[in-house]
Amino acid sequence: MRFNLFDHPIVAMAADRLTGYWSWTEHVPFAFLLIDLLRPRMVVELGTHSGTSYCAFCQAVQKLQLPTRCHAIDTWKGDPHTGLYDAAILDALRAYHDPRYASFSQLLQSSFDQAVDRFADGGIDLLHIDGLHTYEAVRHDYGQWLGKVSDAGVILIHDTFEKRLDFGVFKLWAEVEDQFPSFQFHHGHGLGVLGVGKHLPPAFLEFLDEARRAPEGVREVFAALGRANSAWCQLRLAAGRLFDQQAGINAYKRQIGEMADPQWQDFSSALSRPLAYVNYTIDQVGALVRHAADLARRAGASK
Ligand SMILES: C[S@@+](CC[C@H](N)C(=O)[O-])C[C@H]1O[C@@H](n2cnc3c(N)ncnc32)[C@H](O)[C@@H]1O
Image (cartoon, rainbow, N blue to C red; front, side, top):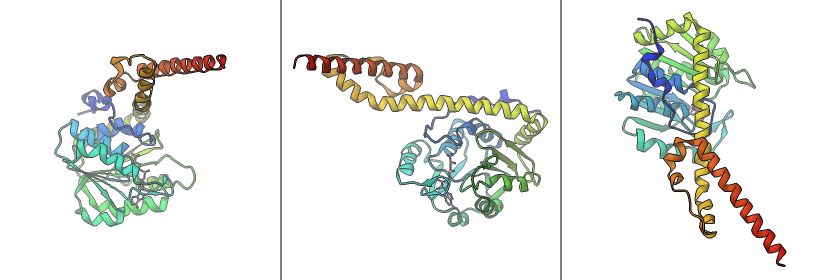
């Protein structure tokens, strides 16, 4: 059969996880599609940080009600490209992840090398490699984990189109892309899709056939879906941040005898119409600033 995007409405699902880190956000629609195409028994991610990619895999697994097991591996300490970071990143990820996904997913705080022996050879159907992006590091991660990928398995490699600084994933990609059926997206720093298993799922092969028949079309469509996802996430993140300021705004309004607008007092309504909420908050802040300036002027005049 021929691949038909309209058979996979999951690509249009909005990402739930809002992280404020954007390097992977434009690939989320493809992550949703890939889970639908592969229906993997096991997903492993090397390099999770705040969880944009990993939570996209988990969201799709949950939406499709698959019996998939997922594992995220990271020291959650950082590397020379992300910079070192503190425990707040993992704490925030756990607070989001555990109530939603802990029944089928595990966050494993470890180096990739220390974790590798915990996984059986040939057991992983989807491996996402997104650790340190120097050539030496990604070559090492790829070599260490290739044997863990199953007969039906696919490897995703992020940052394959990035050539800044000492980024070297593109060199690894050049070495491996012809060894297996593959496709590369160029947007979002590049995402390589490598079908390493000998018996890949037919739905995935149909997608690859279509991607290789019309590569520019497939790249354009997924770049546009990615931009839309990113824009929607950014808007909701902005609304969420303003929502956090709402308590202070409401307290000030109470002091001056004004009521808070009841339609905007819960988080889900703020996130469901983020632009309207951003405008509402900006208007309120403007009114309160004018009120405070007026008070200050009157206080000055009465001196
Ligand atoms: C580019 S970030 C991952 C981004 C993430 N996939 C996303 O969606 O935003 C890379 C992560 O890999 C982790 N990392 C790098 N090398 C590692 C290693 N050898 N073992 C464990 N974690 C590592 C870093 O701590 C960092 O959090």
